[in-house]
Image (cartoon, rainbow, N blue to C red; front, side, top):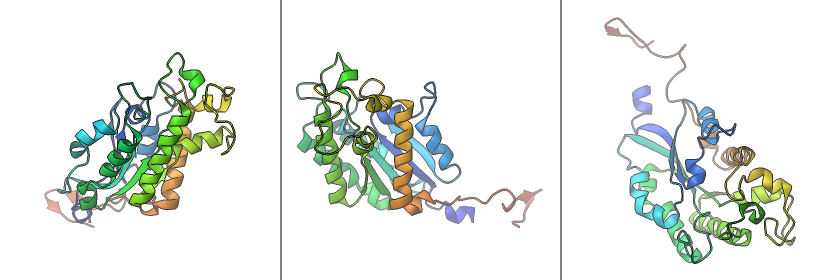
Length: 253
């Protein structure tokens, strides 16, 4: 059973993104998204983090061939999670900025990568989160209104490509009580939102609670939209049913 089940390689999930990926293993804050995800898929899917602090989609295009492995029997990619946009959305004139039209084209290239098709892998795009402009001071290179535009662009790419999207910007803004048509929470000209502050440590990066909300939303999406991934089976039997080799003779039971 084991040899047949791993003929394509070890079932895997790859997280590809910027600092929000690179920071998923931090445990000193009291919560680790990476540990929670690894525990959830223990013995079912190996969780591989490919996080690059400060990167945008223009950087991602250069390294994508090295991030998404070929379907050569070493690794069986079941799911690729793409989380870029926070750095692309830096205001024009700053080094990390990527024009929104280029951001869209870059995302399209990532989700249409040939190696994904060869694996038959599913894809989830995660939108950039909101910005709290009050907490990000003295930096003024990011605005929540712009983050919203890039989040909406990511949603449009996912819908056009037929892949799933986790609307993290909306998840966080919903938690803060914001509704479409209200003054945009997070903006410097709107009173600071305590709830949004609970999720963003410095106005940009996620707090432990922010990562926890992200994890809950991610697992909910998998359960509802990608049940085969959510319910991925263990490739090897539990110990009580596992074949064994006694002495020099292999006698699978």
